[in-house]
Amino acid sequence: VRDDVNFSSSNSSLTFNVSVLVTTTGEDSRIVEKYLTVYVKEKNDFNFILSNNKIMENSHENTSIGNFIVEDGVDNYTIILIDNANERFKLNETNLLTAKKYVEHCHLNQTCPLNHEIESIINITVAVNNQITNETLRFVTVPIEIEDENETPYNLTLSNVVVPENTTINSTISILNAIDVDFNQTLTYTTTNPIFTIVDNRLILKQKLNYDKRQFIPIIIRATDSGQPPTFIENLFIINITDVNQPPINVTSNLMTVYISQNATSLVVGQLCIIDPDVNENFTITFDKPNYQALSPAKNSYSIITDDGLELMGQIYNVSIADLNPPNGQNETNYFVNVTANITDAGGHSVIHEFYINYISRPRRNLIGVSTIQKIVTG
Image (cartoon, rainbow, N blue to C red):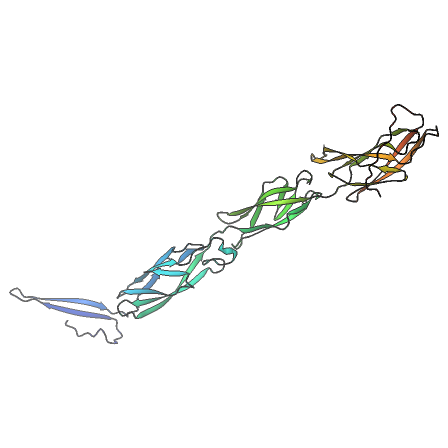
């Protein structure tokens, strides 16, 4: 080396021109001179990069993020992870990996290790050490970007699943709700059950209900988000129909003709026909004249089609009417009796019905005989 250069000095110049003289020996000895330019760098003067710093939220354990790279360095280096963000990241030599296991539905209790909605950037710190001396040359803070992923809505619920059978059409029977952790997204609720429709988040009744025909209705409801691609949750719910006592539809009777028997203590004088939507209905029947009493009704099921096409199930109740103090046959005069019945069902619905009884004094062969009377509840 021809020039006297001290590379270890504190000379402010970091560039040196050096002349190197080489002399050979022997018969063909010669001298060769080479000029070199030497650049002196500080030992911590290097570029330090991470090949990729982005990772999708909900990534599974051991997912590779990127590799740490030292550029323009003069030594061999060791990379050490100093701050691993609560053990969410780890190093395999120079490869940065996720370190925690992903648990499905972790958004329910906010325990996801990588959650864009809560923490979109996570800072980690690494140390760059000299591999020989183990001297720390630099501490570097690296931001890891947590990228958003469209997550499935969860916790789909109905505010109410019990509906009275007399609920009117177009009534809101329940409010739908689901949770979506993604910001700025909307949920759309749908169902294929024709008995209901959904407007916004309201479940609306579209057909009449009948407890006697159906006590519960299964319905599948889907909540779909507006993400790309859209995701959805789908649940089966059971809508329970509750029985509501309904008023009688109609009460009829024919003209009652009674042939008076001598010394009769009681007579069945005729029947009332009560049509009521409720099965196994109980009636309280009173009369404006104290000598009349209603007997236990005979029941027959029936179905009718309403004006809107709905089939209703119900009962026809044939109620026999007894006269507990009939004419004794001593008086040969025929006469009519006007009787008013007050009919009240178990729900408190009352109907007034007026009917006539024609008493005929002359005995006839089709005389109605003495009946055994079974009382029902009367007012």
